[in-house]
Amino acid sequence: MTAELTRTRVDRWTWAVRLFRTRALAAAACRSGHVRVNGERAKPATQVAVGDEVRVRGDGPERVVVVTQVIEKRVGAALVPQCLVDHTPPPPAPGTVALVAQRDRGAGRPTKRERRVLERLRGR
Image (cartoon, rainbow, N blue to C red; front, side, top):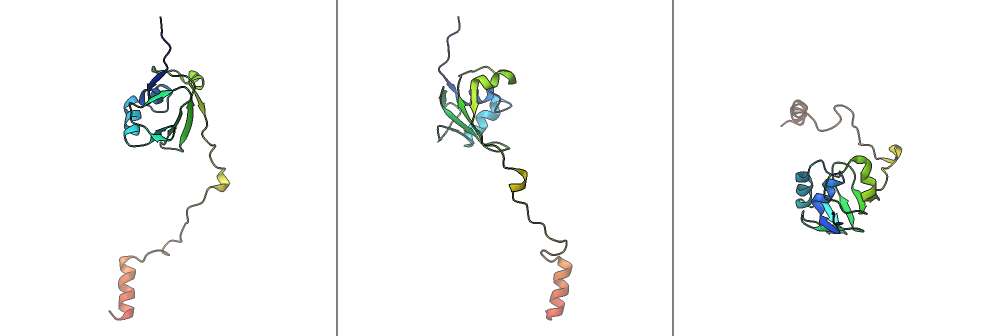
């Protein structure tokens, strides 16, 4: 007979719903402040329940999910949508992303050789 879980650790839940590859990575992210539960910074042992909002900062954009089912065992990718509602904002359109400024070759800081030439011209 299986009892329905009402609360579990945030590191265990984020690992179970595949937000992290391993539970150790989930716990490390919690310790370094990359996981928030209901707006508050979460330690690995912070409890989550149905309705809690979990924000995870990782390699990509911040993921915002709401807990709909509390689980402790890792589930397949097909079952993850039953356990959470994803409120992550969509990525910006490719045309709206700011481009990194490119400079022409040699137009930036002078090289050591160029500085010596400039110093000779200035009479130093």
